[in-house]
Length: 419
Image (cartoon, rainbow, N blue to C red; front, side):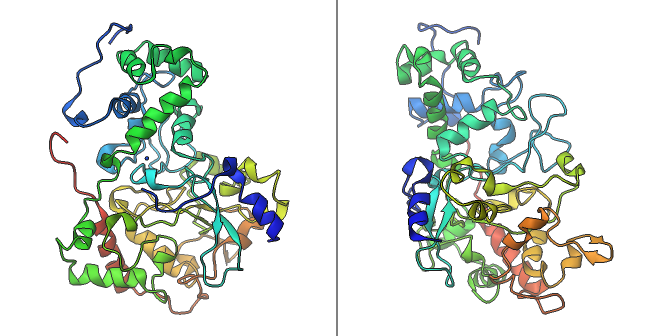
């Protein structure tokens, strides 16, 4: 990439500079007292409490009945599908209308930096090369946590509100309108940035420790308060081994650090994994439909050549592995329900593609969830992808089991009663 182009691309997303691992009933009147805080609201600031009330308010969909919490269930590390008949897709507010992709967890999401471009860290990367990173959702289309809040409220397949004003009217008529005025002032609902302020309150709530408690066995191990079993320790070693799992290449952590905050298990970048197509997704019944991923971001188009944009198709954001045992199904299209299958897919995608992809005209149709022109974007160079059909995988079955055993240590303990 030309240096001049790199500099221009680096100004995407409102000119943000990306910085990694930075620790984010009945009509009410001004006289109406806000509801008393529940036991799990102790310690929240008024702004965070307002965000919680909005997050849990099922009136804020059209028709009413679906809240943010409906698809971001606290018992599942803030992931879920609202009882959808298709496990990979969340049920929206209208019967039979489903989301477009697997619901991402909100767990540890507040650590994700604002969308922008960063210098590529791969050993074979061209010096000065910039790659997209950060942002929200699988395709990074929301720059930050505030924009992430705004999207589902207006998305027809999700909460389906016709306008920002419609959302504000529902909050104004709710039993926590007084709390909104306490936080932002009496005129909040008539101010031009009222919707953004509401979103900022939810973002503040999503940045509280309940969304990132760092309370897993692995965290206790880092603090010296727990020991990994022999199998878990073996899995952790394989996870880090650049010639075996090489998981740290994307699911990053700071090797040698004993601080839980240095182990977020994502570098926030995007990658084209070439996942199998999920036939349960209704949109996939059209053989001409392919989810484009990162290249949908319109911000690229005025600044980058079409060839650069096309090279981003099929890339999706690297999720955190924290709480991965309870946030299935997996990958952007939810094609895998088993965590072990995900690890096995990484290890054998290229050595045994017939295990994961269908045959078409007698040939294995690899990367069948990508448009043919995007197949060249798939990551085929990094370990463990650097193998050909018939060659020995980087990981055998026992090693896959060990990595899964390690991943199970990343599940946070449920909060104590009253917290």
